[in-house]
Structure formats: C-alpha cells, structure tokens
Picture 1: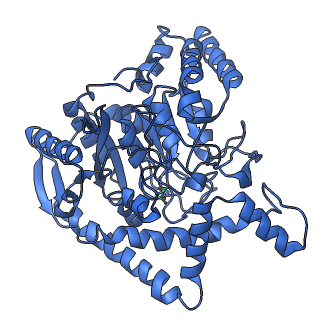
Picture 2: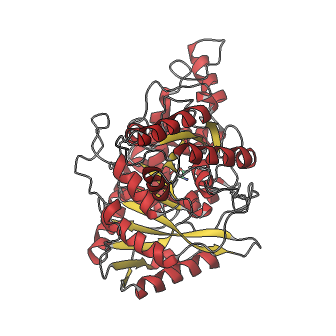
Picture 3: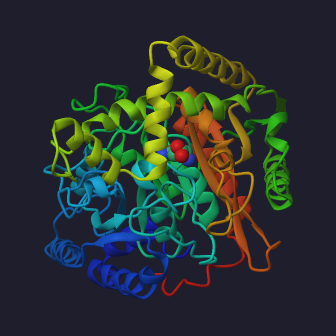
Length: 488
Ligand code: GLN
C-alpha cells in the first residue's frame, strides 16, 4: 500500500529515502490538510525535523538503526508525551504538560520512531464521532462534512489522509477500530494487558488498551511488537513473552476456522453487509472454513459497557479536581472550587458519564446495576470462550454503518450503538482488528466500511496472520480520500 510504514522504514535503512524528506513531506501535508480536518492538536515540526536529521546522520555514519528509525508517528492526545501538551481534548487539562513519556512512547522512541504530533479525540476518549472535542470536531478525510469516528478520530483521520506513517490510539469500547473503519485504514486493539497503559490517561481501567492505527496489517504488527510486553509501571500488563510476528506475518494457518455470528448480520447498512459477504467469499476462496456461531449476548454488550465504563470513569476522573491538575476555578470555599472547576473543565458527555458512574456505584444501586453488569460481563466472556472452541477468529462488521454527517447523531443512546460490534471485545479482554473492506456509495461519494476479526486473548499471532492474508485478498479500496495531498 502506498506510503506504508514498513516501506518507508526500509527505504530509510537502505538510503533510498531520507527521514528528513519524509518528515518534511508529512509536515507539508499537515499544513495543507489540518486546517480543514482538525486531526492534530499540536505538531512537533522542529523536534521531528531534528530527530529525522539525526536518523539520516546515523545511517550515513553506519550506525545500527532501530526497527522504526525515521518513521513519523502521531499520538492520541490522551497518551502522555513529554513533548508538548497532553490535554485529552478537555478544558480541564488545557495547559497540562506531562513530566514523563508513556511506556508505549518510550518503546517507540527507543526504536527510532519520530513523534510528529498529538491528535484530537472525543474528550477523555468518550465518544464515537470526534465531535465532542474541546477545540472543535475532527473531519473525515473522505468527506469533510462527515465524522471520522471516535474517539481516536484524530489519529484515524491523520493516517487516512496520509499526514503521518501511523498513529497510536486507545480503545476502551471500540475507539481504535470504529474510526479506522470510518476512515478506511487498519485499527488494531490488542488483548487487555498486552501493551502497557502506563501514561495512558485512564478512562475505564478494566477495558482500556493502547493500539496502532495504520495503513497495513504488517505496519500494525510491527508497532504492536515494539510496544507490547511486560512493564513494571503497569501491574495489569501481562508478563508473557511477545512473539515476533511482523516477519512471519505471511504464515497464516492453511485452513483457518472463521466464526460468523448470526447476531452480526442484522441492522447493518447494505454496504456493510456487502463488505462482510465479500470477506466471507474471499476467506472461503483462501481455504478457510466458515463456521456459523452464536453470540446471543451481542446486544447486551452496550448496556453492560455503559455501566462498567462510566463506573470506572467516575472514579478515574475524580483526580481532576482543580487542585492537582489543570483548570482551577477561583473563589468561594473548597467545595465550590471543586464543583466549579469540574463544571467548567469537563464537557457535557464527560459530566453525564461521571453522574451515571457515580449512580451505578452508589450504595442503593450497586447491586442492581454494577454487580449485575459484572455478572453479565462474565457471561459474555464465557460466550466467547465457547465460540473460540469452534473457530480461530470471529468475523463481523466493525461498525453498522459508514461515516455519518457531523451533527447527524444527536441522541447519546444512538451514538452509543455505533460500538455494538466492538464493545464486547473489551468486555471480554480479547483482541480485535478492523480492516478496510469496501466502499459505500449510497451518499454519492465513496465512504469506507470495515470488517472486524476478533481472536481469543493473546492470540495476536493468529489474528494478525489471518488479517494479513485477508487484507491481501481484499486489495486496496479502489478510491482515495479527496483531501489526500501527498503520500510521503
Ligand atoms: N465510543 C465508546 C465510548 O464512548 C468507546 C470509547 C473508547 O473506546 N474509548 O465510550
């Protein structure tokens, strides 16, 4: 695929491309497109040029280059970087600068990656459209009147519009995969605990996971491989070894068993159903065995998620109190300082989640809502375990529709339904990847739609290999976003 990360990395290594010219190409593209897309909050032009020159210098003097030397990567603005700000797209953190880099950032940097800027998101990663950002909505590079998806919509728009080689996102209920699907790129959520969350501003701690948004499965595998693995700073991080996968990505099982849940085929747009059918046919052609499976709890995922995630968020966001971080409203007594700082600092959706979370955790309702949701969570997990006894991966849509118009979904409950196919991956703690699979022409101009593959916890090698094989069969999308100005 044009402009993918591995190709750029190999070019820089061999000397056929310079890191500085790649960075300059992306910076030019950002200058041209970002004013309309609003994908980046902050761009580190000087630091990126400086880092690129160092990589080019190191290559010329024959020094060993890291596995990501010279490739520009954008970072969702809820992941801590010492460079610039870490705002979570919230007024409450408007001027916040992190004193440290997230572990994922440290690992990318140790392999020579260049952090080119911070990308926009729905405030504190709560949303599916990137309209709930403190400083304006993000626009979809395929059609600027439409949303890019969310909450990692800035990262998805930046990769979709070729403003960087790849980007990092976070996925609590679908926030990497859904925007990837709406922007025509690859979005990969690894197993819970696979990549350290140290430095990721916590939303739903039992659900959150960092992952890559890329233009190819191979790029996603490489970034995963670099970032994954145990971390003393995150006690939820898995200690098991990380398999080298990017170099053996073409070793897909010869006859993979692909589960197709009955519940994933209702309520989708015609283009999403068509993309799914095409993926099924291609997989059959590759020798896969399609297995009909049942995931009856699919529908219950959203209500379960909207108890557990707000409960955890209400606790995690208690630290933003006007004393320790960010925005402080002056005047009155201490209680008023807390209340006013939070009322002024947090947007409407964040306040809604805090209230919902506080409610389901309160003494009178804990058993009826929170405990019940944890019980349902266990059943959802068991349902996946049963399904994975019959198949290696589960195929389905990523999102029921292509990108919708900005302002087109105003009911919060309708917005929550965008994640009907993605939340259960997080609830069960398994892994999932979205691949570009087709175009929806129903609005006139082409809009991408994705398909999702899910696999059992820690089955990333199987997931990525099957995804790579399917990606090759699917081929490129057959159209490009009109805002694409360069493929540096
Ligand atoms: N869209 C979901 C929400 O609003 C998921 C967000 C996420 O994965 N960070 O909570």
